[in-house]
Image (tube, rainbow, N blue to C red; front, side, top):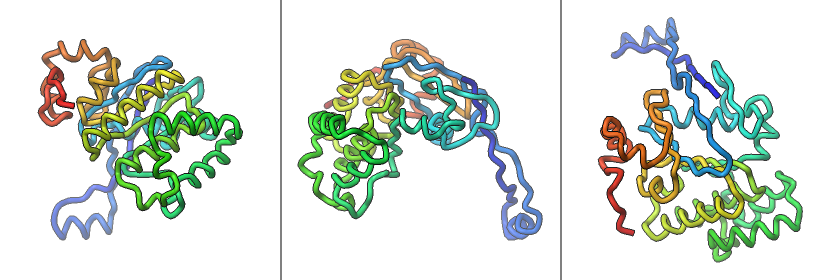
Length: 263
């Protein structure tokens, strides 16, 4: 895998004159979002894919999920080029983007699951077993009859993860799954992620700004900065690399890698 992605954006000079000029001439410049990104993830790993805001995480994930087509290079997820075979890739992956949902806002939660069951062609037998597992690890039975719009943030995040794994994907992408949650709910989410990985061997790619997520879930860490991979190794190696300290501090808002969490 080696990916690059460029975007054309309008050049705009400051002030009113710059605004008028951009309207008349609309000069375009090329911005490199990701440059020669390359890494390999083994089946069944939980990988922390981290970096500052704007570092290229989302662009990379969108190429891996088939949402974006790379400007150059190629990648394979379970032997598939995601952007060339989106339908097959979609059958094999689950995606949770923090601020977006695939749930139907005004429907009871369980009806969203029923719709997704049909979309992914999950058999009645597999669906029953899957929902039992989901209820065990995520505890959604207590609010599955409620409209999605009435759910708390923690409930909706659990519901989004449930929706992403109904079809038992081989790879699960989680974007900030614990953001905005209280300590108790965060702990439940981490336990659910571990159970999913342990029971089904699901490969999980996790983006987060919460170092506790990384410490408790990941052994393989990939750091992207300014569109380039600057670290791709184990957590214990990262803790030993002093030259990465400042970058890591910026990502995790000053929290050191070896600090212990209270919960």
